[in-house]
Image (tube, rainbow, N blue to C red; front, side, top):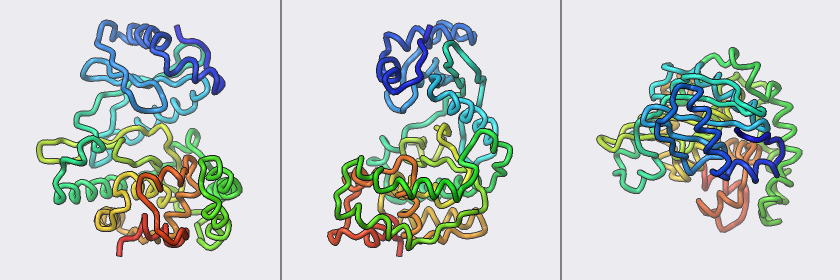
Length: 313
């Protein structure tokens, strides 16, 4: 029911088009014994994702992203019931037609933290970010080795080298001004990052959009979207945290890191320069977008930007 999707052109023609996607999703639901359940596509996310009634979520992965489907299913099974916040329970995963894969999971309760944030009182915001820190501490303490066959990058040092080699061109492609671009090589060279860190399971996109909360009492109720998970250095997970959870709020980042450090027992002494270096090396890094969202210091220096986004003194 769904056509083969192997190229960017295929993706653009097929994945956004509900006239193509919906019949395939309905057919797959029928095969999974969920035929007739209300099917509603979520508007966000890079992959097509559907609520199937009130209890299930169906996430589809075309052939071009089939490995991501394998990874998400494996990670969900690995973390299930092991974090202090709920994650989707894996119901079933497997192959469909023409290279497509699927992951059927439970639907979490709660409201998107991104949507709810403007209504949340300051004291509750502080408690919520502390809960995020606690959840990350537990995630990073899990043994990632059972997932090493499906999660990269394998050699963390080689990954850093590849990302460093392409960092300037990646930011140029996103429209970053030359005054910032010319600082990137020297800045990255000045920040020592471990090439062989203690290996941790990383979510890699910890952001308000991937967190759920209960408006009755404002408690964290869920974290989802483990598709881009990796195994690597813990600091890499705090790129999303600083940019999309605490959003350059020094007090909130300090609160989150204090909770994380208590939970790990080994502290969270990540320096602002280290976190900005990880930001530049992140697979999806886009400094121009982040600056539009969060602002930037007037002196246009990366050393100042590190403190502007990730400082907490």
